[in-house]
Length: 189
Image (cartoon, rainbow, N blue to C red; front, side):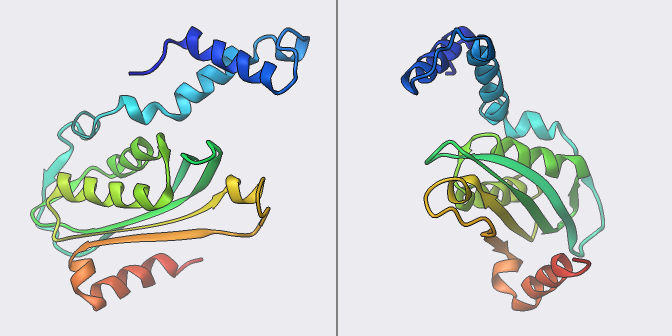
């Protein structure tokens, strides 16, 4: 259960004071409430449910070849430092009598990304959700992202990028299927 907005804003006020700042100075007067609203927005995935999100947008189809949705932007928050990581998600699935409405892929990515996360778990959650909803013969998800916790602090490596993948069903069993997917997402770059 999430805190009421006013309580969350009070915590931000305490953090600002703890940093040695005056939360009553002109530039910071409304910051606790703005930060609380921003954090609620950035973590709105906790308030979403897969079944509600999909909303019966699974349709009968004879399509049984690979479907790829590429370059879905994602914005998430590292659960270790609460700093953003920003990237792209590539998804493929092998339909088995059912296809999912196109916009639902982006919504599923957002639902899981808008939680405190690590990229490895995010990749798995997206793949398993799509498999669950579509009953596909296979699902593949690749995420590539840049992590502010590695860029802004610690080792401060500006050009680092993390890539994760999750292969389920035919994508795990068949090297040819996996290779086709990886070739498709790497073309046109």
